[in-house]
Image (cartoon, protein in one colour):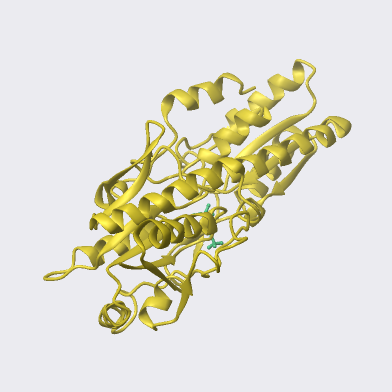
Length: 345
Ligand code: F6P
């Protein structure tokens, strides 16, 4: 049994734990071998590989990032990419290719799996700090990002209180507000703005004024980078896009901070956490889930369960169709959002 593995899209704490878990199960459990493809699909297209063994994976469990490197290249977007990727897999005798990625990488894996007459033998592993992939209760990396954001909010509380300031904290979350909602609840935010619920800046300022009238002078406003105002209430610049068409976000926190200060007169500062949330060592929880996903991905490859993805459901790691997982993004559920809203000013 020969299994290929690649990591695509943005990096995420826990990627190395998945790789280590996969290698362990393939080598020790099935007596097989694992070939690593470098920089996501680029390594598959260009046949850029590294042999992965239990020995070569020693020490990577707590390391952030990915030892394989990553990119947003896909075979479909690369001229001759599909044929080249197919040749590479055949040359290495790869029986199954484990694709560790977010919605974009998994969607391209699904397209390749569906190719007629012979699809690629792909197995998916959901990865993103945004936790926005459907059919899995959790993606690894998310808990680590929430811890980092919560720690930042805790620190901002004390400086906010010392200066009687409003602190706006911008966190990641391109299309969904899971990080913002969890960190907002954990950090005791006065207000949290998420993409799922467009905000009215007048209502935000009014709530802050009410809070300050009650004698509370320091407030924390958590803003997901993908948060948007109610149409027609506030002008924000069109986001630019990268070469793969992904929105480049970041900046809504500064706009919200400026508006709060201008409209209320409360001194306001902004902190943009950015890629700090994605870097560094994974939390213990993320290491466990990532390791479990890696071992389960080896089992899927062994069973020939192609077109399937490992997923956390009811506290157990099982398997779901990649097609179902990428059909729509997982947004913040109404019950958790109502918990967060209970504490808004
Ligand atoms: O999808 C995960 C994510 O962290 C988003 O929250 C963020 O918008 C994006 O990646 C940024 O990615 P990059 O800067 O690598 O393009």
